[in-house]
Amino acid sequence: MTSEHSDTGHHEGLRLKARLRYLYHGTQPAAVRFRLTVIVVDLAIIGFFLAAPILKEAGWAFYVLDYLIAAVLGLDLAARAYAYSDIKDWLKRPIVWVDLFVLATLLFPTWLANLGFLRMLRLWTLLNSEFFWRTVGRRYDDTRVEEITRALAALVTFVFVVTGFVYAAFRGRAEHINGYLDALYFTVATLTTTGFGDITLPGNWGRVVSIVVMLVGITLFIRLAQTLIRPHKVKFPCDECGLQKHDPDAVHCKACGQILCIPDDGD
Image (tube, rainbow, N blue to C red; front, side, top):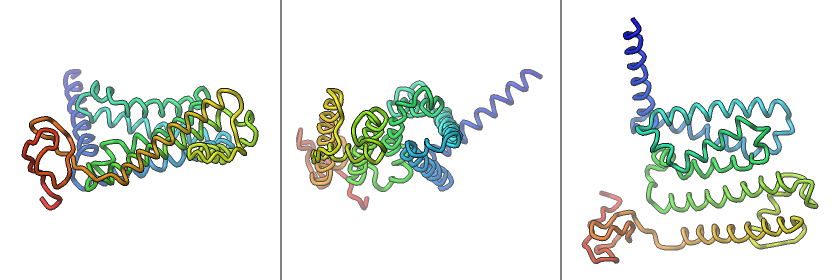
C-alpha cells in the first residue's frame, strides 16, 4: 500500500511538473494567455511597490496586502522553479536572486523596511526576462524595440530605486525632503544634472549619493540615446568568428569576411 501511494504521488508530481512546464514554456494559446495573466499581475505588484511609501500610512491594511503579494510572488517563483528542467541552473540566474530578495522584503517588511526601495528592481527583472519576451514581445525579440525597452527599463528602475533610497534614508534629515514626491524631484533634478539646488542632501554621504546619481544617470541616458540613434543590428552569429550582431543587409561578416545568409523579416 505504501508503495502504491508513493507511485501515485510520484505520478501526480510528474503531471504537475508537465502542466507547469506547459503553462510557463508552452507556445499554445492557453499557455500564452496564462503568461499574459501572470505579467498583468506582475505589473499590478510593481504598482503596489511604487505606491508603498504612501500606502504604509494605511497601517495594518498595508501589511495584509504586503503578505498577500508575498504569497502570490512566492507561489509564482515556486512554480517557475518546479517547471524548470534543472533547479540548480535556475538558481544560477541573477534575476532569480533579485526576485528572491524582493520576496524576502515582503515576508519580513519590518526587519527589511529600509531595503523596501529595492523592490522596484522587480520592474527590471520583468522587462529583462525571457518569460516577458517570449509572451508579450515575441514579435520584437532581438529587435530595436527590445533594446529600447531594456534601456528604458534600466533608467526607470534606477530612478525609482534611488527615489526610494533617498526617501528612506534622508526623510526628516534633509531639508525639504518630507515626502516621496520630494525625493523623486531631487532624484530627477540630480540625475539630469539640472541641479536647481532647492533640495540637497546633507553631509558627505549626501554628496556621495548625489555624485553617484549623476554619474549613473548620465550613463543610462547615454545608453538610451545610443539605442534610439545608432543603426539597428540583428542577432546572427557568424559561423567562422562568432561575431553575434550584423547589419540587417550584411552579406559578409565585417570581422572575418565570412559569407552570411541573414534571413529577412519575410522569411
